[in-house]
Image (cartoon, rainbow, N blue to C red):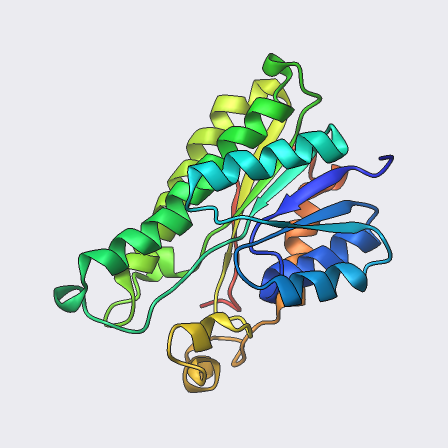
Length: 246
């Protein structure tokens, strides 16, 4: 494997799929992590001319994460970057009505999953562990700043945790040649809104965005690709909004 290897969790669609395409163009081999959409993951891999690999696993399960990273070790023997992109949202609901199962599921995927993957990536990339260094980009959300009242405060809180993790981890591993940054997408045209029960959310809220439109997955992918690149070699601990000014 002459190309550097990057694992993109939740990579089969939306921002993850756009990022996979961009990173292949930039010279990476992309490992597309996915939980259930094997059809989408396989189709994406087939379109990327042998420069991508699909890897199934639920990031909310530590067992699955350990298996995914073991598979990476066996197939590539290297890991150069991680993008913690896997995340879920649930239909709009006030906190007073939220069942425990919903809250636990949101945090298991969005927070615990990111921690499990970051831990395993650090163990492989850190110079303190014999690695060659690398980069981690966490996908947060503008909801971490806005709070998402009357919609999904649980999701917003989970992304707030990702912001804090980004800041702390960036300082913890900076001297070990690992950079850790985050992007905070705003209203982006992906399937996540439909999965949260609001397929018309972009159209409904576009007027609240200073730029008066939703963003695209490609616009988010461009920033992540830059943060992973050597051009961002002195950038760590940054949390960058991609939200049209919202």
